[in-house]
Image 1 (cartoon, rainbow, N blue to C red):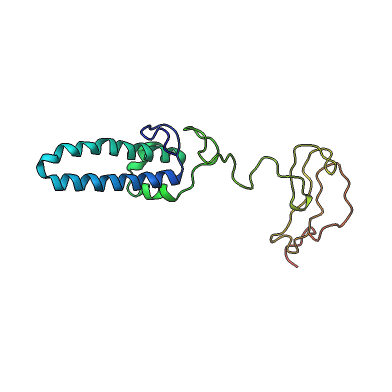
Image 2 (image 1 turned 90 degrees about the vertical axis):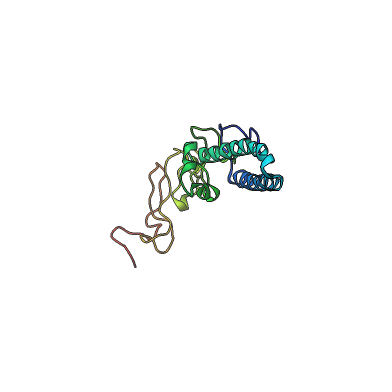
Length: 173
């Protein structure tokens, strides 16, 4: 966390962005108290606000990058609040790798397994799927309310007749 905190390049997670806002608020409060208690002579101390703002803008730009947007988007009113709650883009984008290390959304992996009950696709040949082609059917939903496997087979593997409860023309039982 906080590697290259003053750089505008890369991506950061929501947690790091939230901690950055807390750090900014605390340091700004301390700096404001010092300036207020010292009077007019402490105006020069207020120059320390410049690196503090640079830190906040850099962290905001990296959080915008995690969402797949330019760092300028942080100038949109209330977008900073959105950045606290919106999940970042999965996988690599034009600004770098995902800081969480997640490359695909759950359920959208390239290899869906070889379960015929849910209509799966497996690109490699297996004992149950020698051609490595689509095998299985539709499981559940409004066209198959019983949730049983449909009698659909798009591979060269023979399948017994009438194995599923779905029949052409049936919408509901």
